[in-house]
Image 1 (cartoon, rainbow, N blue to C red):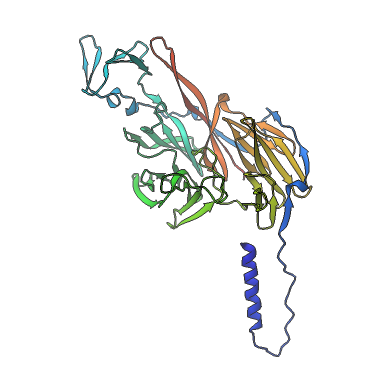
Image 2 (image 1 turned 30 degrees about the vertical axis):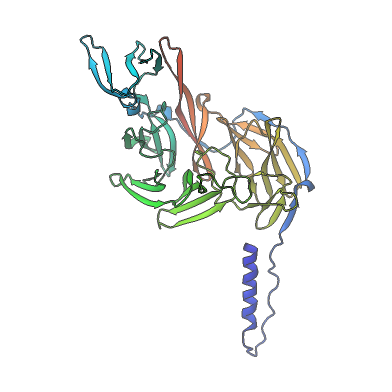
Length: 465
């Protein structure tokens, strides 16, 4: 497209010159030295293949990683209303006898005849057919961070208190000031109807922006008594993530057909994805179609290709992928590759092969100057990869690695309490992370049942500057 624009501009300039009247003064000949750079054609098979076996090193990499130990922050404990039997089991009342024993009263449509509190505070439910079931104690829970946003010196955290339900029936938004280590609760909610999806939130300049069930984005101003306003509505599609870049909210939506099914993109290898960009300063909304294959966790909240400088086309001969930039066309020789980076020095992508239902993921890092294709089997270290100045940050099954393709070495990034990591909102073009540790709640007659949940212990982000 840029090449076409340049050619049109050149044509317009030539036309303008031919229409000038002769002035009798000789003019210097036009400068024809400014010639557009040619498009360079590359084919992966022309590169020397260098097989680099994967090595995992437990030595911490030298990265500007910032960490916040949230296990030391006091978010308090709260009892979510969804944990109350009166709100979930047709309880219409409760009686207490002289010994202090509680007895619940049920409506006529309930098939529960009794709820007992066991010595370990577990609940035992008896049904009209004589069967029984058990539930964990209905007690206040610690708050855990499930999403956070960095805004200068402040970190805004979405903290939930109903991790056994995952319904966002009880949550708060806290602001942490890094310079003073001051923690303030800005907003809290408790109710049977979830107010909004706490995952689909972002914060810009002291305002919370969130996506609601009516396909609209709302703002809540913490500086103005939590004043709430609808800012714009998405006309079509199903939201899969929301984040922001500077003063612009970025939303990704999957387009649906008349049957409510997701549409396929023009490449035919993934869902049709549309980006919406809302400028909070001007109110302007712009859109962009994406050719990126959607194959990631819908709450990752990171996959925005608005700044990538490449696109992918299909070869008309064999349907393989061709990576296209302003300066080159790179025929990968593979179908359905996942492009990580493409510039004038390096092209990096993933290709997957399935053998007897087992998928093998290989990373190809092409050095355009040396004409080398460095290949490594990265199946065990990466579901998602992010470019970091030629090297890669990989995320897989709760673990983080810093991978150096030219060495074949993946440095394991240590996590607090050997926990598991999940993605949060991007920061400076890279994902940020939440480290969780597993908590178990035992219940039943003899603690024979276990229900697990994740408690946040650390926030991690990388500062590239």
